[in-house]
Length: 107
Image (cartoon, rainbow, N blue to C red; front, side, top):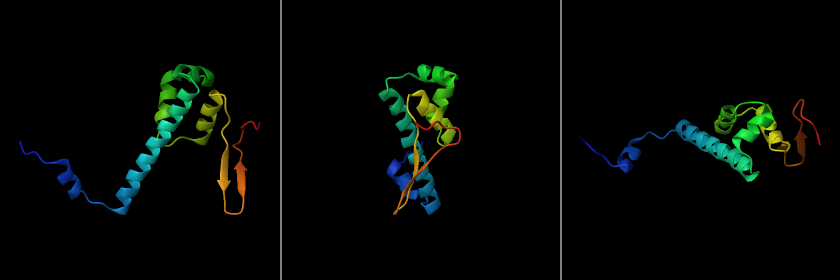
């Protein structure tokens, strides 16, 4: 069997801007996934407790936590199940605008 070092294989990969962007997007998605899992754990809540608050199964909560592209409405509901409120802001050099999600309660 022909064995090669990983560094040799990696050196042969074609690096294009598109490939680099795809890798960056995957890395960003993984950080986002870890962030909402850590947020739930930091609130000392289990997936089962969040599922009960959302009215879904534990498996659905796991799916939410592992999606690489989550809808704002889903994220907002998830944060509300943790006892919080999601705020979305558009930040410009001269102003910051709070964006309100349709149907979201403003506190």
